[in-house]
Image (cartoon, rainbow, N blue to C red; front, side, top):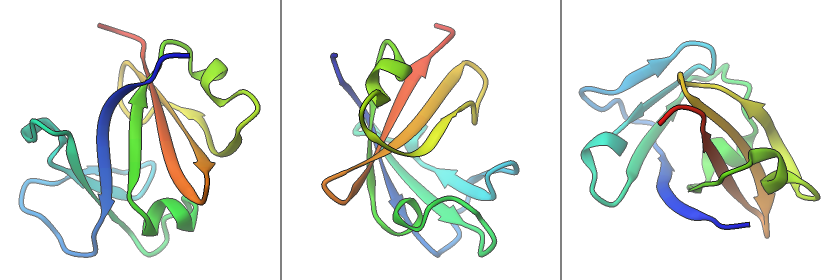
Length: 107
């Protein structure tokens, strides 16, 4: 399995001008598209039902060719889903840290 760095997601409680809202997940995100280093800020609504570990700790995201292979045998904390068109994502917990895998379905 090859892992290609994609971004780091950092939780915040402060609104950021230009952030985008993902209604189905109750989360705002900002910055990935504007950062050459892939820094993304994540702000979660109080009633967001994502795992606390994702809402409170930074996560590192990697692109993978096969998301189901990437999560096989891992502690999956968010099952594969599609928060944006053309992407499937899933989260695992590794050594107490959240890790995101992203499989691009459309190039």
